[in-house]
Image (tube, rainbow, N blue to C red; front, side, top):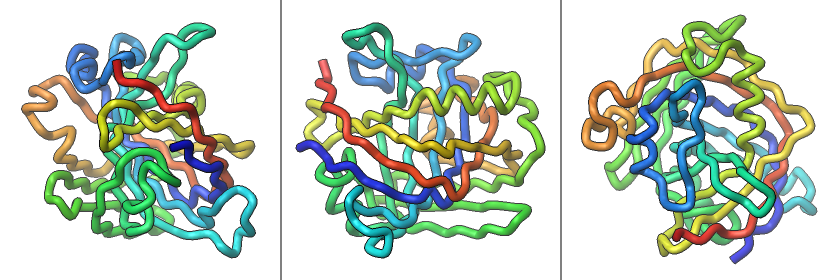
Length: 241
């Protein structure tokens, strides 16, 4: 089923990024996807996203909905009809919204799990934590704003990091059937991210030694986007080969 075009406001998008051993990342990807490498590393992470005014593109903003959401992501590439394309693979999506769970694969791409979120935001600190209702996934991240991107081995500076994530606007999500991936592309004319400094980060996904053996996934950097109007365009489903 092809999802409709959606409009929204990205009230907060916190990207917590890890550099990952390429062979480890490759084992988590369905074909035809492969890891997109940056300076010899695969790039993976957690997107902690609060959306506001979510609605069908033709609907008035007053009818929009608001929700806390999370997506585990791996930067990928694949061979398209006109050459190599880039985006992200999303093995898991979680949300505080019952509607998003019910609409996963219909209005919103991919299957969604239900989660309980705890959010604390001040001008000097953002903490987002969630635990899924199935007990499978837990995340607890605290990030402070920074005037520049420091300590990253993936990106030389904020501008390079911003370009990388802006270019990776196509997302392909795992589905219930496992036979195809649902696709959606983020578009905004107001793209802007700021650097963050990670004060603490715990993730049952990235801290799992069976999924990521010791030394294969290292916390690298964080980026923050706030109050950005955005549209979401459905992409043709991608067959898992």
